[in-house]
Image (cartoon, rainbow, N blue to C red; front, side, top):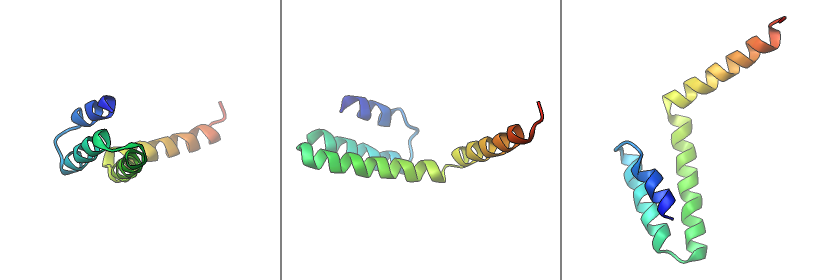
Length: 75
């Protein structure tokens, strides 16, 4: 669990970091069934944050356009 806590602490200070920090602490203290549930909630939150991140959206759009360009490039 310390790896997850370390990764959370490496994030920039934002409101979602506070939520993730709280969940990481709860997961560290919880028993196994509860820990799995908390980790699943952390994963869902991380996925939503990534999808809402402008840089992630830009990267996805660039990847999409590059794949289209490469697919139609005669080289």
